[in-house]
Length: 234
Image (tube, rainbow, N blue to C red; front, side, top):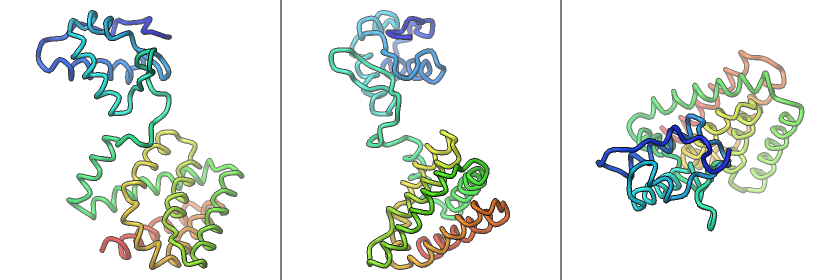
């Protein structure tokens, strides 16, 4: 579908907060599948006419949707629904986590634990041989960088990304990438001063996944989280 062939989701709106109402309506159309990734939205003129608002309200709504990562501007062609997340865009979900993280470290630990246990167990079930090799290579690189006296922060983040990717679940991959960026700074200390713990924890998670041992996966993840909390947060 291109240029909004199905437009039943576009309805006139009231006069208060016009740009926000237009933004919400278009966003709901995207979320509801009325417009698919890669589709072009109708022109500003057509959107203004169908919503019953001025072009300035449509233009402001498009700016907000672009900032949130829903659409991109294609010069000369209008607005297109994104097919991938722009890594430069601040995900509102991540921003909400940042705000919440300052309130309770226990809640933060609980949240990360729940997500990482679920992802690691799913990785145990769905990881391919290629996934396993990539995780092994990451650990070997971490060992090498630590021996050279380098920070292993990027290796640590990459290790967790590989676990999330091994689930082959796009929702977990997106959430995993977001939350690891949230935890990046909290991991910096352990990856400069306590690299032996990082390597040991990753080895344990790797062995548990390769060994298809669910209990060992939970134990290894919990041990890794405890080290992170003790060395970086407490």
